[in-house]
Length: 62
Image (cartoon, rainbow, N blue to C red; front, side, top):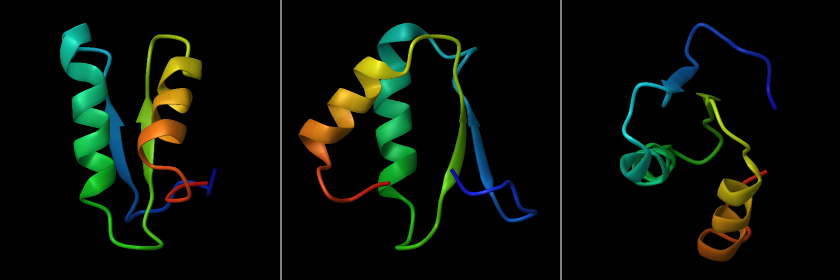
């Protein structure tokens, strides 16, 4: 992951209800311009999210 910068967008999903976390993460991702990134603060295992990204946004992220 790129190091944090002053212009980095940070998304903290810990206070978000579980059913809204992944849609919020995907919405934030979809708002990014090519080359932009965001920092995700999460309180659960990221593997299911990674698999969801691989299935729905294959080739669009690193």
